[in-house]
Length: 228
Length: 297
Ligand SMILES: Nc1ncnc2c1ncn2[C@@H]1O[C@H](COP(=O)(O)OP(=O)(O)O)[C@@H](O)[C@H]1O
Ligand SMILES: [Mg+2]
Image (cartoon, rainbow over all chains, first blue to last red; front, side, top):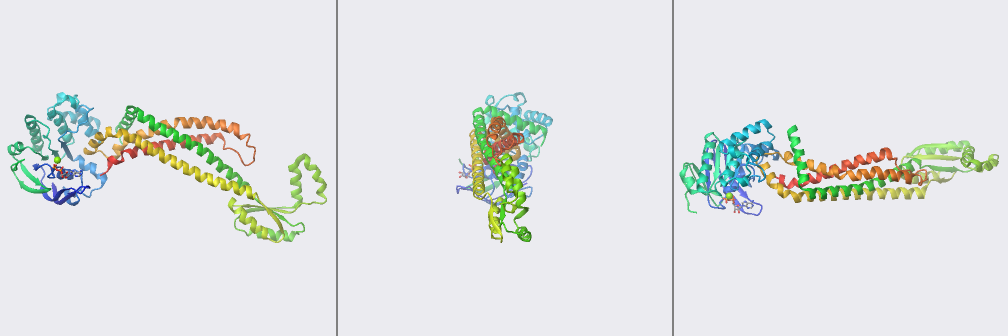
């Protein structure tokens, strides 16, 4: 469970990205975070995996205040959260397999388990046959699927995606959404910032709408709800 | 740490050194230059130190008693000397013993002095040692005040100046070495930083998926260690060969009792080990410093 209590975020340059956000996300939920560019979606998400810390207020995951955990505990928090970005963030010189395996190698998982688990998730995202391809040899959708495989390879409790379909054409976006739904079906919490009215209005889930750093609407099976 | 992790760090560290070969050359060059200079300073300082120690252990005060001093007075003077806190030991040498020493010391020439045995012109002497060479001067003054002490003597001016010089040389040398090491660390760190942008993406992903900072530092540690060790090859060789040359050629010419170079064995080996250690230290420090900014939060 993720809870935010009156969270404020002011960046070093004085920009206020969040002002008084209070919300609660239960385990296994699927949540869209919508809002105009600059509304604070990314900031909201970054607080959950300790990429940023709140300037004020509390962010709790399973009742642990992550704003005040020790620096050396952050890696363990990150291991329970998979993060996906709009621009995939794959390492260009590594194959699909290596990119996914990398996430397990750097947390010192044992090599035999890595091999088994990496092939398993590549299969899950439908890319087993392209394991040896480097990102440049893959389409955008395929690259994003590799990124998703990397995010879920360690069986995280929460998957966070910041505009994961922002760079993809509609058909490819639906494929990606299908994978997120599958991930969510296994009980993993999925939190996704998006700009896609179509997706939000078609695959109906909880919608948290943000404006000027505040939550202005929070509905289950909600709609996208504003004009771009 | 797991063996597989260690292997990975070594592999990644070595790979980075090879991939960024010009960076490696620059960093290794910085270590080499630094160590050569440090070695030169250390040879100088440690030898000066040795000279100072020799002087200090040789340093003594000779107090000459008036010719008409009788045995009772000698005893009371001895007691007074014993009472001075900085005095570690003292010895009485009668004028007869002094004459004998003199005759012995002079050898052939000394025989002519034998004439004086009947009418000894020398004084009784107290020979006094102090704990520190710095105590020589005040203790000598104090003994000079004692009744029946005609004069005191110690290698005052020369010893003082030598010790003073040695002290300065030590401070300056240590200052230079510290400055050199800091410069080298800074150079290495900046050199490695120039290549780090290519790796920042990788580091970012490592952090994202939950790699520990110590894990991220691992390859940098290895890189620094290798840089330091490779950088110390030339300085260590230079010390082993060069100091031998110096020792053989210089030691015979420096024909003073108290000036003697530290013997090649073990000094050159100890110094080499020290250089290797310093090289590894600055290499590792510089390298690990270069990732610091990526490990915040
Ligand atoms: N690292 C940062 N430093 C300074 N300002 C930032 C930073 N990240 C975001 N901002 C600012 O915070 C506000 C919210 O940004 P963001 O959370 O990225 O919104 P969104 O993802 O909805 O576009 C914007 O005005 C943005 O310029
Ligand atoms: Mg954003």
